[in-house]
Length: 427
Image 1 (tube, rainbow, N blue to C red):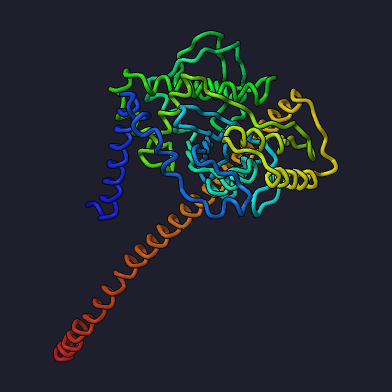
Image 2: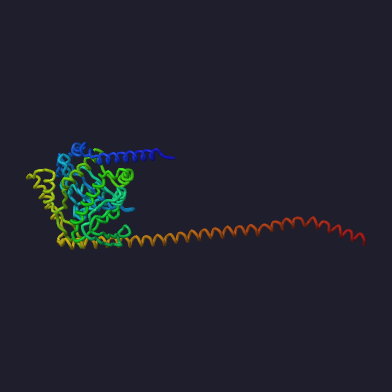
């Protein structure tokens, strides 16, 4: 029997799945982006604290934070992919700024750490606050995608086509998903969800630049497939996969505006950049050190905001604070060495995680064996006690019969005097 809460949850799920189908139909028909073009801008919230916090806000453009999160069982996970999309629906223009996950930032309440740790510390909200503080802009909306769920979306789409730029081979048996194995030939490839995600995760001597370029190519392939009429029969499974994997605060009209603007911008040439900076080694850990001045200048131009003295002074203050926070033992390293360090660090972390999992499994098996032994011992002891009690009961039963027989004996003895008297009489 369903509880009232279960019924409400089921109705809510069906409602959102129905709306997601409508979104896809609008996008496929080509009218969604046009009809709701300015929804992202028209529905922008009023930010009363933005100026006080020193954050830039563009009235005629929208900003969306896109996060790919690698969630694990009993672990909130970390952000594996982090981008900020700036959209101009009126001009059908968009730009993507990719932020390396090892970017060194100040996380509120936790000091300086890699930016992907913000999600582990405080989920999406703290990640958004950290990104706003780094970039100096106000983020209007967010989209959080579960990386593992995203593979199901690709499979629901029927796979995607990606032109692999070169031979790619990589093997990591220590990966958390039971091992990472990449073996791709150059040229156009039709990929399922798992293969497509491994293509994006591939790392080589180009480092984050190459990784970000593959992310852009991956997103373009997804958009091409998403707006293809061939997916119409697959809509129910696509919507189901999206519902499980995607979290956002955008309304239906805003989602339509977002997807429509991205699609038009893709046709016009989608701009993409990586967060400017340099790799640095601190206490044997590699970080990406952002060029704050350059970042703010790029975003001001993208948002159409003119630089003034107040803005310039604010940027200089932030830059000085960041420089003063840098440890004295920070050593700048070549990009190629930075990538090698990151790959080795990731492998070491996976080895440690797997070793810990093995130890936990061994302790669990030992504890289970002990519990099974104790349970068996107690059960056997109880059986022996029950057997002893049963035998004891059977042994005492005949004694009561003997007593009863003895109680009948005096009746027989009463006949003995009569026999004696009879003998005396004869004499």
